[in-house]
View 1 (tube, helix red, strand yellow):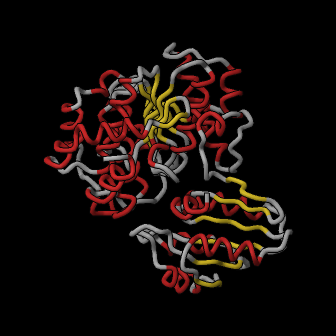
View 2: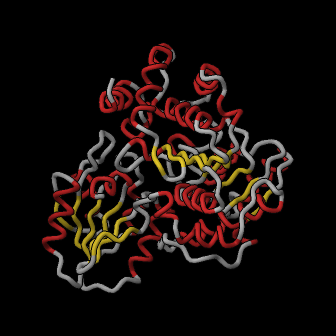
Amino acid sequence: MNYKETLDWMFNKLPLYQMQGASAYRKDITNTVLLAKHLGNPEQHLKCIHVAGTNGKGSTSHLLASVLQEAGYKVGLYTSPHLKDYRERILINGQPISEDYVCEFINKNKSFFEANELSFFEMSVGLAFEYFVKEKTDINIIEVGMGGRLDSTNIITPLISVITNIGLDHTQFLGNTLEAIAFEKAGIIKPNIPVVIGEYTKETMPVFLSKATTTHSEIYFAADLIHETYPSALLGDYQIHNKKTVLQTIKVLQEKQLLTITEEDIEKGFLNVIKNTHLQGRWQKLGSNPKVICDTAHNAHGLSIVLNQLKKEQFEKLHIVLGVVNDKNLEEILPLFPKTGIYYFCKPNIPRGLDAAILSTKAAEYNLSGEIYNSVSIAYQKAKENASSKDLIYIGGSTFVVAEIL
């Protein structure tokens, strides 16, 4: 199979959470353990930093990778989901895995995948780990897909575990309280391995402390320990928390002499994060006159910060291109959106996308009004046609909406 055929097979023949939702979620890591054994347990030969959290784990992972690249390390970076091309998920020093390697890996192991009904995510984790071993990376940043305890990435024993924060998202899988979700994320804390917590609440702190006590892990709360940060190419207000999390993680790595990183490496890593790792969709400016901003925030925890930042912008009219997936709690997120905005309702082009008419009807209950469009690109085009040079266009609500306009 060529690259396109390989991807089509991966996407269409096997459960894929980003397309299908609940039916693709695996309740244990049995399959991943089986796959790892089949591949010769590549995870046992990797130095890793494991990153979980409701929001910010992508930015945190990219910032860590950028700093370590500046420090001269060969850095593997595994994240999800991708925005434009599957290969964004598996990078070494910012360069994506080759199409040929993806094809070879799938073709070589296809019968095993089919016999064991492996999911898309399980295959991807196996591919990343094998690739990083083959390419002899020095250190790897591994972002959890969802949750932590039962995530496919949770077969690694990292140098340090990182949990950015806890918010209510994916509640149908992880539980509908902050404590329950914190328990799932805390599942990445390993015996005698230090853990950094980015943000905490009165509900989540006891969960983290309890798990760290059980595993005899040193625990560091970045929000309490880091008071100053460096400027970064990532401009979202929420990045202050991610930067503190990264700084505390690096501090532990330095103190334990696990890696050699200078202050200059940190400073350059923060400033060059987009150049080094090609991260997109985080308070990203796409145009001026009118100013166009897109952001992948998609749950109440993330959107509240982004929409608050939007209020600080100067504009005459606000145009919002909005689409969501069908498992989002609209009662939680819609009240956060400004009633003065002009809305362009659309459906991201994936099976999980929520019909724009349903979104529009629900939005009307919160006095959010606008037109319905047949696609994200048409909605965005119409917003650009309607906006004057002094207006602002915001595109968001889902990672998949942002992906379609980048």
